[in-house]
Length: 277
Image (cartoon, rainbow, N blue to C red):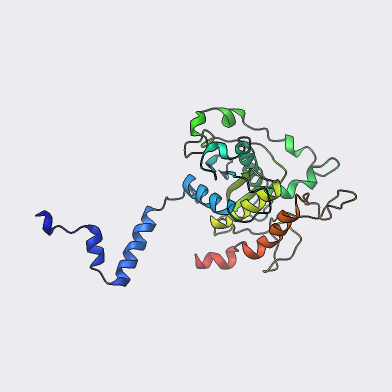
């Protein structure tokens, strides 16, 4: 066929009715989106959500962040950073983010979500979970082996390995799919721990993996259910948590943002929302 008779794909699309054009273009865009692995985000999806969440007001220092996702078995499936290059965020926060992901995944169940922030009060001396932080040591080979040039990319050396570790301050959240089943954990690090929690909450919401069944936050929410939000109820005199799940306040700004999360980035509920997805 002669070149002047050959139509490009774009020309063919433009000959269609407007409604059909929109349908075809939408289909093409959806086809180019990376496919999730076992319901968990790819490196690209994690990085996109992290960048978007970090740019919002989180009440912290405004630093760039690291994020790690593990599957239900504790194996790292994605690592990303929000800055333009690997040195734009604290290097040490890469492994901390992985520990937070492992913590939230390892201490949450299908029926109850516990954020890493929820563990703070319980692990203090005299607390019911004192010593928990030493119970799951970090896999140093997963943490430090591999090519440094691959750190933070889709070929990060931690990917495909169990990282281990327990971190008992803000930034780790369990991930729940639309059926309400836990599928893994998300960890975010790089700012004040309270800001880390705020950013992690927003990242999870953007990834649509926040079908949280229940949690320990005693504050009543819009749908009259509990979630795994950070709890600020430490007595200023005794440093004891009223609920047993409290976390220290980092700054007025981070506290304000955290209290707004359930209304501005509400968790999804399997019983209702899953029917619409």
